[in-house]
Length: 371
View (spheres, rainbow, N blue to C red):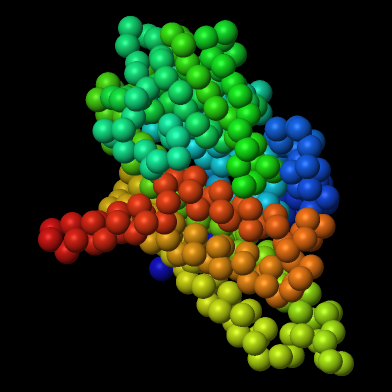
């Protein structure tokens, strides 16, 4: 059993890391955070040229036809840079939704556009601050028409189309039509813009079978949880090293603050949580790859929940300890520590909050033990 990446996967990882280090330094993240642009267009264009959006799309639909493992290594580097690009929405959520439930016609139409970066997709589930549940979803779909409101929707104002959860189904809707209204909303991470989408008799297509919406969403979330876990691992590691580097250069009482036991303990705790998250993410990636190949992956729901919980906790902890290690300067607007804290908070809620995933983990463990 090998929990490491292949040489080719490591090469892909290194190429994406070098590109982001060169084209997406923290000043780019700050520019998007402070400004009106929906995402860093030049960074996204460069990622498109590298083929990133098409990594997990089959060759038959214009993609590179690689495995989920390649998407995982890219996700880790996107998270490490806290890159302000629509990777998690378009490359992960929207692409995986179409691969999972799209008809052949929908795949032929949208997957090549996604692979070439000519379309950006998103997923619209929440309808306010309350956690979405089957009984609380108010958005309706019938006779090819979609009505309702979704908020917040990540990259909602920049997306070409959205996969929308309704009372009974997932539907695909083109966001360029007049029956769709977009309004930007504020969140804790302005570097990842969110919007309110209102559908007023908007034309839409069924994605998968009617009555299967929630089940398909749960399956989509299991795959997304693994990819998000890698992005959170990348972010947690970046926050930890940021804290370490500052601790080595900051002097107090004639010594680097990293020489004091209190700081050492903070960084050690970050490392322990990071490695726990990484191991869970690796196992989730293995299960997702087996499932994708159709040869197993029976433990994917369990592995996805474990990866999601461990990675969320690791990123949250590392981002907070990074601020604490920086002391008073860490709380200022000028400090770069805020980027990973903001991203950690948004990602923790992107697929449902930590408590929801802990409930899933317990339920899935009970089901496995009862089998």
